[in-house]
Length: 398
Ligand code: GLY
Image: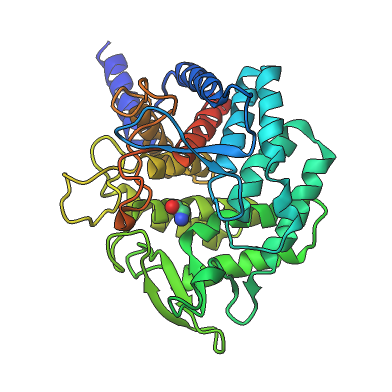
């Protein structure tokens, strides 16, 4: 008997030390909540003359309860998230009415494939909307829009520097001759996809060059990131790393690091180059080690008044989505660690502290642009997008 007990104890210890249990949550409850909120938003968007499909939900400020809408225009970088949310909601509910709404909002962004590049956000705009639409419907028109937009985005690539110019509009006013922002890593996914799906193979090389140069110049020795890297267009060398939306040039802006984690997760998924996996681990571990107890970061990890600083639920949603996928890339306990961290983020986001029952958004407590004083402690559409994306990934893994 003693032997059996000892055997079970050892087995238990082995399980504890070598194979941590993978945590889970009630993902259907969270996805049904999202479906309810999507319907609330659609009802709100129905004016007396029906829905204006060119107007996209952007944010709900802390003191308000209805969406602030923005026109789907080339300057509006968030316009692809609402159509993307509708596609994800359709994927879960299979409701043909939601599909129709997704199609109509998506259509409003087609013009982006027919105009010159305005900035790097084309990936956010077109891959979240048309990308998900194509994945779920196989509509050949959607594919053409994505391929054409990928070619447009590639026109911003500077071969001397080796990265995409993120903000042409900031070149002169700020004297940032070639600027690349960390957010730009997200737009590489559309280039990888296009290269694999009938587009120019050079798009793959551009994405890899951008990721490599960013890896080399956009991070400090401790693997925390700058928001903006400014490059010399003659030599291609880094001039400086600075911030735009973080607290200071040398602090870790939470969403910037979140974009980096998501971006390098995609780079490894698309290339299987182990250098990206190694790097992904380094930039993830520095993010995870200083999270508060509920796994939702303050808007900047080095903001001066922590714990009295706003959180950024959007960064948590982006990282949760990235880490659910990344957990499959790592052997041993690292994969479990990333999985469990992602589930803890999603559990917090799915708790009353972050859910938005009084408003039609999914989530509260995101921070858009603290230095500008805009979208602080607000509901923001991209937080909702990455939240529902992560929930769907979690439901698919079960
Ligand atoms: N610039 C995009 C963001 O706020 O993350």
